[in-house]
Length: 67
Image (tube, rainbow, N blue to C red; front, side, top):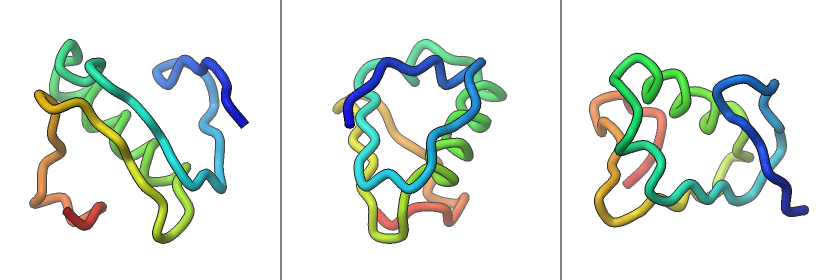
């Protein structure tokens, strides 16, 4: 399934195998970025993939994702 989704306002999808969010997180402040990363973690199945742009990263200290 492919869908447009406002991850700051809409309730999260769940049971996803892939979330692609390229070149978006770099424009968010720290609080919004943390909220979005937690939403992505909730939405992904175990073993799912989070695809980010080359200039984006998540905080590896959070322990939510394997790098």
